[in-house]
Length: 533
Image (cartoon, rainbow, N blue to C red; front, side):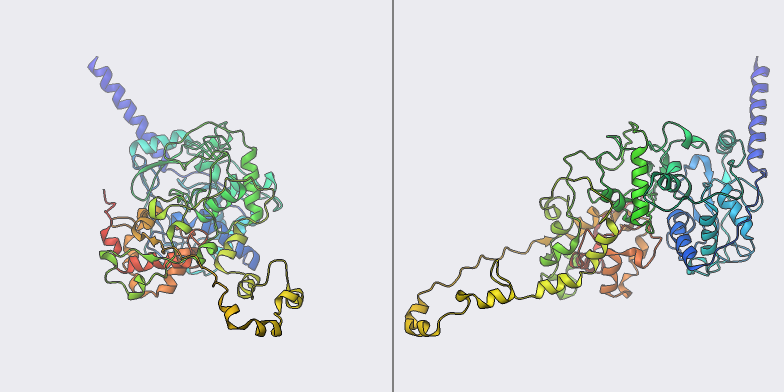
């Protein structure tokens, strides 16, 4: 009996070792005959795709180039994995690779030496693939040569066995070339193309590792396991339009979330969800309408964003309204050493700019969500208005007031507008003095910005608090000007297009951002609890 058990164990280990060895073996995949497209339009398209789908894995948190990084998002039981160095270095990067080899890696997830990789394989059309290759060959600073190669990825014993069983150690079946790009339009066809073949929404938001999982009934229902930058287990959200998913999300809600990283309640979308900065209104509408056409699936993913109801309220997106208000930073020990102007009351109330916060950062009244009548007026235009007020708005703000209902010439020619000089003189000083002076309501006391609470409310602490992934970056801000940092806080994508940091321009105004910057520069971070585990 004992010998039988030992023989069974030995045979099991032998089979496992064989499967693990098969994982490390080469596979057969064709080389797509696709060359890099360096035209201006292709470079713009390639940059948008690369920033959204590739950069978050291939550029490490503190790196300025796509020189590779640990793939901490994958569960540790599978092994240790690293994204490749994509800089133009001939040995450590892709400088010596041909366009066909790069195209095979992207389309089939097969490395240069013929091994199946854990990265997604993309079924994007030939033109989009050529655009991505063009951007990677463009000499962009992201691809500045870096001589340090990424460490080799290694499966654990059980991770290798599982990968072999799930994939069959065979690349996905698709043609090497001849894949078309659907016409760009706000259609479900184009939305399907982006969700499955360009942005890979289907793979991340469908549970499991099978390459055919996106063909099943649970596609987009969420539940895929990841690890966030703090080492916590997270699961992808249900993005079908079920009550446990995106039901009651408007087009504006959706566009702001996928492009700027902010949920409808103002909270930050969880890592490793990327930001699709290059997505325009047509693409957003197409993707939104396509997801609405997917059969709703019930799956209340734990820890997912707050689910909406028909009565849910939103922040008053658009920080220009808050520019009219003034406030001061709450004095505390961290601000004692800040410049005097930090305490002069020129910072607006965070509660006017950030909706849904508590106490000092609580929201003013907001209106229930209304479903959009069309895709016009979405995030792109609104964000621009929040950053750069239009000339007409500026002009109207400086115009002289007129009587209600009177404009220009009529106001000037109205009898009551020009008093009779003789009657005025006859009335004498006593008559004029008898008119009571108009009373003015006292201006309410300027509310305060609770900078530490706002820092946590905006989700900044999860990345920048002591012990967090990007904490060390803030240690360098003393050398940056306040104005530059304010711009970075509100629109980080203008400095680093592939940054995972949300765009806060529509949520906080410049004065509120200035309060946060001054608090950070005054050493406020040192008073936050550490996120180290």
